[in-house]
Amino acid sequence: MKKINLCLVGILLTLSGCATGPTYQNYAKTDAACIDGDVANVIKFFSDGEAHVRIAEVDDLQANSNPVCVPPGEHKVGFTAVNSGRTVNEFITVNFEASKKYKIRANARGIAFDCTFNDITDGTEKKLSEFRVKISGSSQTYVPIFIPSK
Image 1: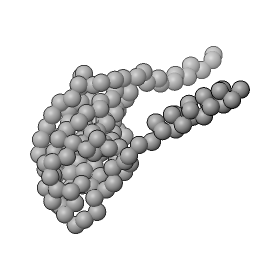
Image 2: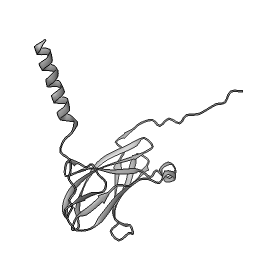
Image 3: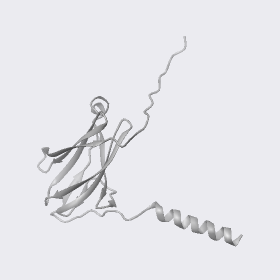
Image 4: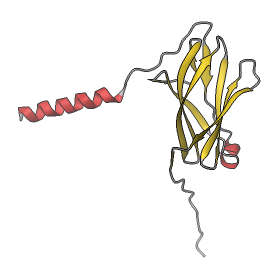
C-alpha cells in the first residue's frame, strides 16, 4: 500500500510540474515596443477569412497578455491565428524599435494564412511586411440545421 501511495504522489507531482512554466513578463520601461494580435471583425471572419490572432510566446516563454511589450531589439515571437476551424502556429523574428506599437493580422486564403506585420504607433496602420504561412490544423465546424416537421 505504501508503494502505491508513493507512486501516486510521484505521478501527481510530475503532472502538476507540467501544468505551468515560466511566463514572459512584460517590459515596462518607456522605450518598450509592444506587439498585439487582432480580433477579427465578425462579418469579415465568415466572409473574408479574417482571423483572430493571439501572441502566444516571446523568446520561448509563454505570453499571458496581449499586447506584449518587449525591450527594443531582436525577439522571437510566436503567434496563433484561427479562422473557422483552421489554425496556424508560427514564429517570426522581429527587430523591434523603441517605443513602437505593432500588430499582426491574418486572413485565411486557400491552404494558408496571408499575414501582415504592421506598425500602428501613430494610430494609422503601416504595413511593414507580408508573409504566408501554411495552415497547420483544422477541425470541423458544425452548423445546426433545423428542419421543421410538417
